[in-house]
Length: 71
Image 1 (cartoon, rainbow, N blue to C red):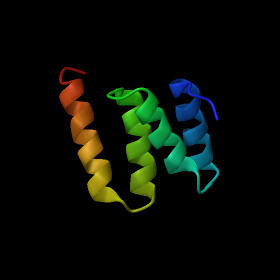
Image 2: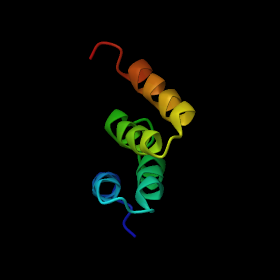
Image 3: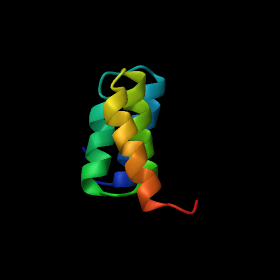
């Protein structure tokens, strides 16, 4: 598996759209490789929300807002 965070994030998003079980793991790896990147955190939050892990998704989204308060 690649260690390119952008590639991992893109693969996670596509995997999520396809309903693949590895989507969250790919997004988690992207966030591990490149921590505190709002776009990658957003992808993970979306995938977690789709799996009904709303508390974890919300915590990530709050962190995204903290990282980018003026956008």
